[in-house]
Length: 113
Image (cartoon, rainbow, N blue to C red; front, side, top):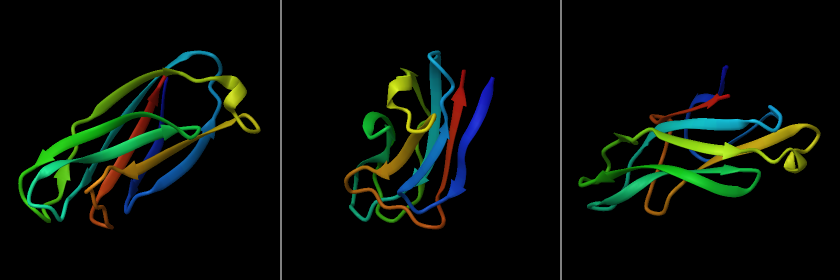
């Protein structure tokens, strides 16, 4: 079973709540786009669940102000049902250091159970 958690344009941060799927293994598929104002460097998207950093989707950029798609990241996690608030979990996407996003960027998170 899959559920689309995020499918929207930026900018970051984006925070959503989703239903607690129970004590089952989950794979989150995270992708998006971003840019940097620096000449070069690693840029990307941080993924947090219930306030805990669980992974990131990154790309190397060797040009300033060029929007780039990040490499899709698959994050395997067992959600702790005790961390759910009113049977909901929180997923938040934020920018990594030296990373910028705006309304031209798009973000997607799919939960696979």
